[in-house]
Image (cartoon, rainbow, N blue to C red):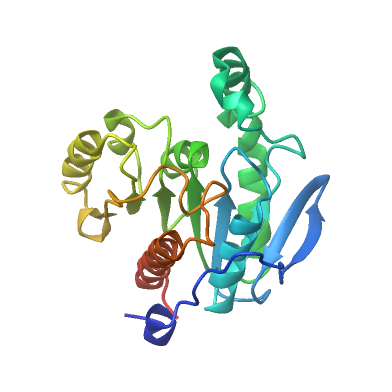
Length: 243
């Protein structure tokens, strides 16, 4: 396994975090960058529906601190959803048809992945949270050259999606996701040539969003479990990305 020390020493998450990365642009798209540009290991992060939340920025910084170069694009272009929006079916429908659609996000994926490769990354992966997990599954189906992807408390995934991916996948569902559906999907994944590299870990003691914007990282239990999830992300991508 590559980078064993990083796997064993994933930094803990903290509350009241001040971001350490840098803001910049790819074309007209605002982005957050973490880690050392020029790293051979690149990660593209798809945040949840709440946008540039401090928890997500902290996660990017942690991944950057253990050897990855990370790009987090503002896919929702400064207009994230709010908690009240989640109770409005018409708002969610409009979101998925427009700002949250793969058609809208795909150019940013292509641009971000190209940027990572042009910056020196020879291995590139993708990570998605909530709705971003659906995009990661689509990226692993439609975009070439990805070493793998990870989805954390993913939303809008069906068991059929797993059969379409073309690279290793790790899923970290919470207690609010349909674990039986994930088991069914991963049973199919295991039949693929890369099936042995796929991983399914249930966080059945955590609610949806614990490792993203909804996570109360001032709570020591949630902070620990978020650190556990990040540790799994580091281990998964270290195994997929050679030195």
